[in-house]
Image (cartoon, rainbow, N blue to C red; front, side):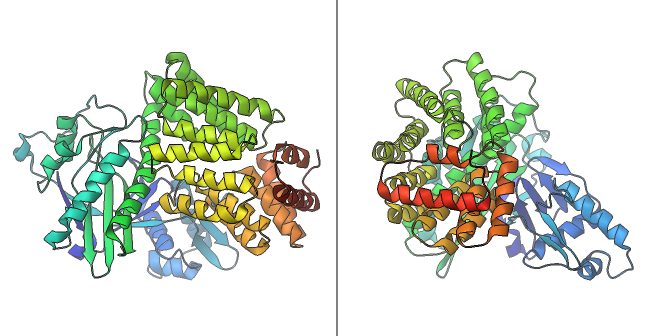
Length: 541
């Protein structure tokens, strides 16, 4: 197939892909995808989803839907409800959860999921004769997490911008190479495909890679647009797309930001795709099990997810005791159980995490994530200054490690320097705004604002965190404390119940014993939190 890299909007057909969670609604092909799978829906259900997503900024009435989907024909409430329920089912939602499609009684419906819009880049088929009639995808033995970054196309019509376009390609190749376990084709090989018609499946076979990443850069006036696509090189199916549309300030600073954000997003996306492949594999090996463990961690920090992740990491280590990634995975589980108040044996959990990380670093001293998580353990065991230093070392090894910026901010917070925390959290969110753990940094911003006396700001940040991930118990408890301090006791009690539904064992005693106690500034804030939790009805324990 030929990879064109022109926006469909430039061709005048207005084709859009709406990306939400792991779904994609392709308005040109009229297909709903979940990763590589096509979800079969009726034309009316597709039109209903399309209309709700296009109008997601407002509440859509029944009449609006009937006019848009049924062209104003008379439709019973039962028929409309059936179609809405079918749309919910297609995207993994229910009438009880209403995670994506919300019903507002006597008003209508609204699509409340987070949506990204991407112009679908044209993938034009090349005739089979051009490649000897070979059009069927053939399985290959490509390494997992193997990718080629193909030269980005310069759509600016300005040859002088070629250096910037090539710079994005080269920097992304270098930065992706830092991701643990990722095999990236060298840039010199990749650049041999520059300005050529691309048959991605053929390239996948030639280079023995599973994925191809490519895109286009277009400069217009004072703005820069970068479109990126990740393609399954075995099937030619688009797996993921992203668009950056930003004002031009410093081109090279912008290049750094684009590359960092792409590297962070791709890290999570590629692991998710590999975890799905592993589910259908008959012969699982240590790497397959590791991917499945990380996929469970990425679902959210609950005791259930952590327990399932640990099972996969331990099975991986049983097959390959030298698996550094699985070893670091067990440490992530242990520190998470300790710092998120899931156990009374907090010190033992953190000690186990530190032991595993030290073992990993004795084998792989330059492992950036291992250094970062050692820093996290230090931060939560009253060694915040050492923890900050470890996170800074992690960043020296991998400049795209957005979470390291967040943990530095958390470390300074523990040192009683909350006023310095916000800049680090903003940097983490800037580099990876849709990070799997972005909710954590939003929560830290809420905590920081509360410590600094900006309670209303704290509520706003904590609610953003909950919108990003409703399955993290502590955010609900902390929101309850802040709401109680503001006198909103009914809302505070509801937030407590939401938290207890996720972690029934949480108590004020467990929080007080687990929270740092190394300086008077932090202690004063901690006691204010405890008082708020008490007012909201958190069990004393």
